[in-house]
Length: 484
Image 1 (cartoon, helix red, strand yellow):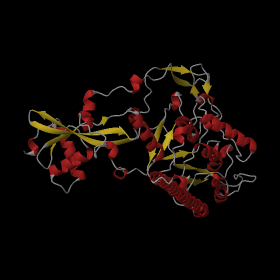
Image 2: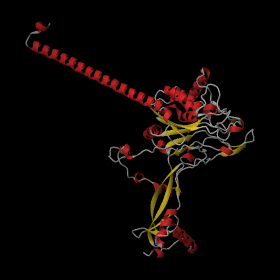
Image 3: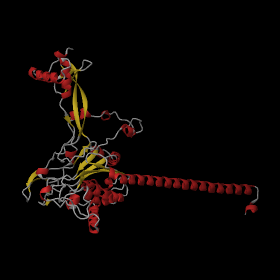
């Protein structure tokens, strides 16, 4: 078929505009090849093209198969708080019929897996989903940044969401973004008056879709284990400003906006008791409106409260990013709009990690330099005035008390390793190697003890058997008086 004879849905003027764009981008190709390449690069919708086999295909509109996290859902109504801020309230929880509402049948049919068309394999089949080797499913090295601090303030409306960070992308991002997507193509065979053709459509799905966890208990257990154990979670430091730590209005008219300031110094006995109170709030799952402000607004601590202790115990890898502060907040220098100090936050996190994350094995720190330093701006008192000194103080003391940690990485904001942290990095490696050796020797001793116990039991059983056979022999030959 001559490509120029294809019936198109576009008018001649639109086609000429696309041809002009194709010539500018692909001047070295023949006119039709340039147009096809340009249309494919732009995924232009509604223009019929011939593939290498002479078959017609056309790009169609993208399909979104997910629910946007910015969507409020049903039942909300506006309300003005005592501070004249506008909020959105909801009288009850979102009903399950809204959460689990089915997609359109036509859309569901297009993306249905073959197994949903009665192509079901028994669990013992070698190609069953649960038989798929983990090596064939490479896991991404990206980190998940959860946002669990919510707000119904109109200006800073937030629901729980997440962001996926690739590589060393540690820049500060405002959490008001849409769902992180992954995309793939679907192909649908169609017919018109000119015969068969194929529709190409880009399908967008949420990169993390936890709805499968509600399928059955096995899926929930396996999926939960993979979600929390096989992923790295990334957290920025808490920013206590009104827009980063926004208020929430309750149905009773109360505005929830506790003080987000963290207790410090963490070495003080009274402060340690305050931290222990925060740990108890997370463990006992008290209502979020009753949480201490430093737990309520901290991204890491609010996340632990949201997922509950059972799931937090599965976490194995964390990343923290923040500024090693050298200036005193306030005045014209920063106007108290800085995020929390990385060092002060970690001093609070360490006892919490020891209590709630028993399986944490790896921590990566991104330590950014303070850009607001200058005469009279350094922190006074016992705190060292240089970033390296402040970090070393943490690395040589507090962080080494983290019980389960085996691997520590200390990088700058660009992802470059900090050489002065190498002694502590090696200290953790040596501790991990020593623990591994101790576990090996303990297992070896246990195996030897078990082997010895089995050998002794076998020997004792042999003695009993021998004695029984001897008694039978003597009894048979009337020699009972010999063994009486």
